[in-house]
Length: 410
Image (tube, rainbow, N blue to C red; front, side, top):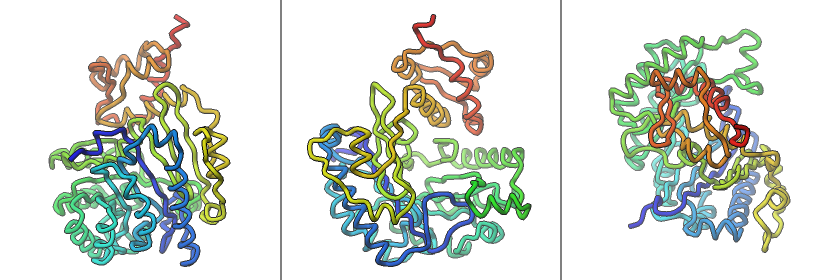
């Protein structure tokens, strides 16, 4: 059988904004204020938007085999199971052979019936938001599930979905190195094949950020975060996990294929409240767009006809009600490419990027020092950053951007 990799990569991101309860640190588009009627209308709108996107002639001609990967994120997509049947009736014929289909889940939503339904629909991979196995951490993060419930949910999920990823959060107030080490050791012992490890962030609109402003909580120091990160690198490396990207580790063959679309300048269609999409262009900066964050606005938007219309900013804005980044240029494209690529094990295709942007590479003293000392390397036109430096990829990105010069100025 052909695999998805035999065809051009095209991802689909579907955003489901509904949650049973809101986590104080989460800044994604989400709401716990909804009814069954609102949720049903939203899922109907997702189907309508999917049909509209896949009716675009230029998109069909570029990706005749359909989607290579799908990711249902949120919010909490695991609140629903059979409710996704109308969506998958449209989606399934649009999938490439061997396509990866991921669904985000919370431990407290895992039941035998839901696992069976997701599998029947065509889900191939679960991404479970465990965040921590420590009771103190679960209380701080205001997670609904217990550590025991997380263990039970993981065991049940693995029996149906061997391709299981779990998210863990580090840097929560009061977290010790010992507690973090225990979380990693538990994940390894449970046989989790892919781990996403995220530093706790204090986003401006979240309750957690307001608590910090009032002095109720205090964020971890940079030194403590660096120590925690080093522990993850050491323990997971010793256990055979590949460090794919600054926040992601996987056993060989267990990587999330959808993630690599984001990290390697590949196209993905985003649908739903707060969803973002990107249509890559091999010669230009590509097209980025975003839906508004309100599920009510998404539900009320009436789609317009796409018959024989070009896939451009005016068409997308009028048809889907999205906001298109119309000021985008090759400088923006290069910044994104370097910022995402340098924090992965594959790095960036330096020669190809310079050629597309008509640039010459003249390393700054800092960047040259990195090359001399092995913190950076260039091999067969591929620029890579040493894994221990991925935690500081933003600073290296700045140095890189200061190392390129328009070819016509020299």
